[in-house]
Length: 260
Ligand SMILES: C[S@@+](CC[C@H](N)C(=O)[O-])C[C@H]1O[C@@H](n2cnc3c(N)ncnc32)[C@H](O)[C@@H]1O
Image (cartoon, rainbow, N blue to C red; front, side):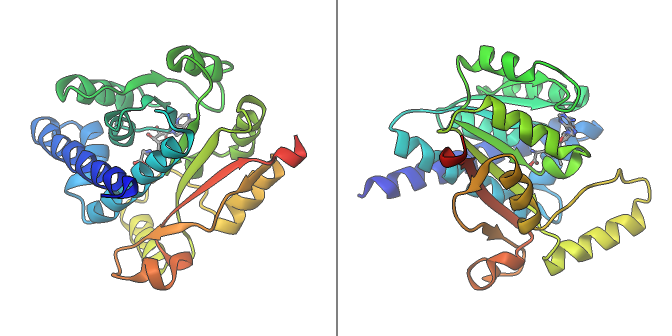
């Protein structure tokens, strides 16, 4: 069997295992609002299938990067929420730290890792205000991250440019940013956004941008996008036919060596 197939099979079975653990964790803690927002979102919510697919895309990207470097990675998962992505990447054998602003999310993430014997570590910090989350992350990971995941996190940051700028000063030219964002050009995302704004009038403001919008912000800070985005959607086959219209996009960025 080819090495690529072995890696993909490994990622598939690890994702399945962690999702199983998320499901049983949710059964035990589902009355806690913080558990619903992550563990229900990945296992029971109407868009859980989409979340499971983006989890798989992120796991596959981490495996590809690890394969190209020939070693396990140091991974920093920014805006990690309840830590399902952090713990999945950790379960693939990478040294992984999840960072989040919310005390409740970090509490749940730590509990999930402990109860389900998963190895992700977690740190509470504000990406916009705390002066030294880079230093703290480096201490936990034992060096700068090889991979920084930003899954559904950037659109929560009003001053997103300052965070991207900080990453550009901190990271080395071989570090990769793995960005996963909802896509305002997707018909289903627009519909969801409309329904949610109508039903949950108290929803906090979000700053969604198109792929081109994120690309421009990253480019301004010296990052180049490595390849076109890959997409996942609830509409079957849309990811193959019109990836740029998919609800959830994943793309990688790396510091542009020429500009350093
Ligand atoms: C939609 S959740 C994403 C969770 C997970 N990454 C995922 O993809 O399912 C966004 C997370 O970003 C966190 N967040 C928002 N503003 C932040 C900030 N200034 N610093 C750190 N985390 C922040 C929130 O607390 C929340 O857990």
